Amino acid sequence: MASMPPSPLIRKRLAILGSTGSVGSQTLAVVEALTRAGHAFSVVALAAGKNLELLAAQAQRFQPKLIAIERAKDLSKLRRLVGTFWSGEIVVGEEGLIAAATHPDADLIVNALVGALGLIPTLEALKAKKIVALANKESLVIGGHLVHGVQSKRSLIPIDSEHSALFQLMHSLHPSEIERIILTASGGPFRTRPLDSFAQITVAEALQHPTWQMGKRITIDSATLVNKAFEVIEAHWLFDLPYEKISVLIHPQSVVHGLVELTDGSILAHLSTTDMKLPIQYALTYPERVPSSVARLDLVKQKLEFAPVGRERYPAFWLVCEAGQRGGTFPAVANAADEVFVQRFLKNEIPFVGIARGIERVLAEHEGVPTPALEEILEADRWARQRASEFPPNSLS
Image 1 (cartoon, one colour):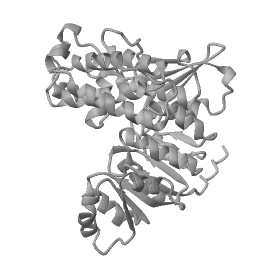
Image 2 (cartoon, rainbow, N blue to C red; image 1 turned 90 degrees about the horizontal axis):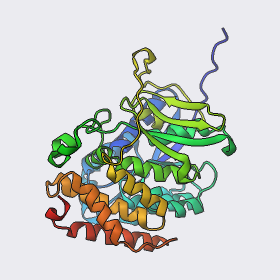
Image 3 (cartoon, rainbow, N blue to C red; image 1 turned 180 degrees about the vertical axis):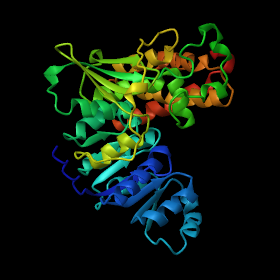
């Protein structure tokens, strides 16, 4: 048997937005692993929020030229933390995020920011002709038409495991071959829980995701399947497909990350272990594929189950999907309302079922803008957050 050719040496310079979060931290771990394997990766810019201690440690390890932080009041503390081992430029706020996203030395921008603040850096990076590895859902959920207007072919590489799977499956397909794409969802911790007990769901129960370790909001969003609805909207913009060609199936094992049904009835599937480092590495090395240290999937031990997404069990999923189909400012309103209601649930202000009820009420009150400009999207976001915070708890029980 002929030996496999060696992996090509990959040289890339990265800017990582959201470097202290889960995806950002894992991205830096992948960078270290790729460097140990002989590839030439460097980090030229880091952007983070309030975790200054971790940011300082990252600056010491990776020696970026620029650091962006959220608040001006943290400047003196960060300077003390970095001491004498780092002497680059520090920038603040939205201007800082844009400076990191458009850094002249960066080849690839990893947007791992959480929330609507990720949209503007994505837009600015694309306008600057950067390649963006995207983990920030809101960029496409609330501003998909704006991103679509400035991106070029292959300028967006998805990091989410489901979209990465579909990106890889569809890479060599012609659009005419695709009947539909299928995203998978674990179903969350309440996949088999009796519906009449949902009003008693506790915060601790909702935070027990069966397959992934994630932040609190995304874990709750995975329990309601709102996160999957956001992924449907993302897929619409990423792959330029109409909503009727995008489906979701419950797949408790979280082994199949995406499927593509072809026009002849054949189905292509992407399977891997549940480790975010794998899609992160693919985004960093694309268009090349190199070996990884991620554990291999043991097919012999796998049981694969699939089921439809029930409307009674996951009402918030269907509400957000419908907001995506309505378009305009409706997805921004759904995203903002969900964020507020999830935080209110985490504070025990409203019941678990109040998340879906609240989203429905905010969407019902919204007067949408069909093709919004950036400021109209941000205004819809502000309005929805304010309105979602005003509903009394007993109105959502």
